[in-house]
Amino acid sequence: MNMFESAGAIRHGHFELSSGLHSATYVQCALVLRYPRLAEKLGQALAALFSDATIQTVVSPALGGVIIGQEVARALPAPRYGVETGAPAIFVERNAGGSLCLRRGFTLEPGEKVLVVEDVWTTGGSTFDTISVVEEAGGLVVAVGALIDRSGGKIEFPVESQSLIGLSIPSYAPEECPLCREGGSAVKPGSRFARSTP
Image 1 (tube, helix red, strand yellow):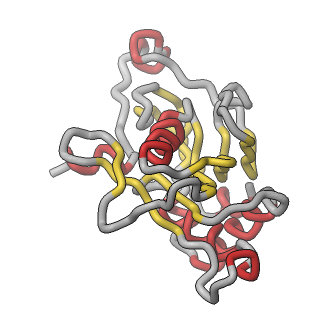
Image 2: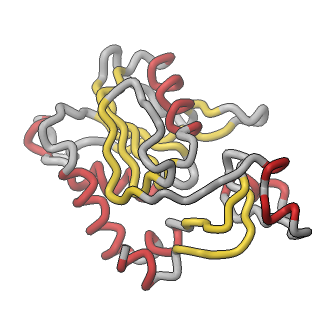
């Protein structure tokens, strides 16, 4: 938490999250991950939570999971894979229709053991979508991880899940948002909305 707070990554205001929910608190992991040494430390800490798992590839949803996915893959023990490159880190990204998919020549072998890594869980939607993409490509998701679980531990994934930090931060459907009722207007700070920003 000290890393996130010192980097200004915990923001307060009125936000629309990428899930569509509203919140008075937004965790902007990009602000801490912009510092490579901090990103490396966070990646090592998250990778250590999966030290007993056999992981061949790390897959992350773009854009938020790309940097931490890379750092987690780098921190995984290379000898397990029998190659000097260690575990690869690839990502899924949204197509023109808004659905996550593998692009850029990324593929998975049948039964390839995958760790899905995300920056923040609110509803877990991007992680669930990434699991679906991995399974459709023939991979096997063995675990999922995130820097921050802001759901208060309420998300139930079908595989082992671990986060570095658990935060219980209230979020609201727009029609139930007390900030909206007070006349406030939510801002959209997440990368998913970058396409609509002039």
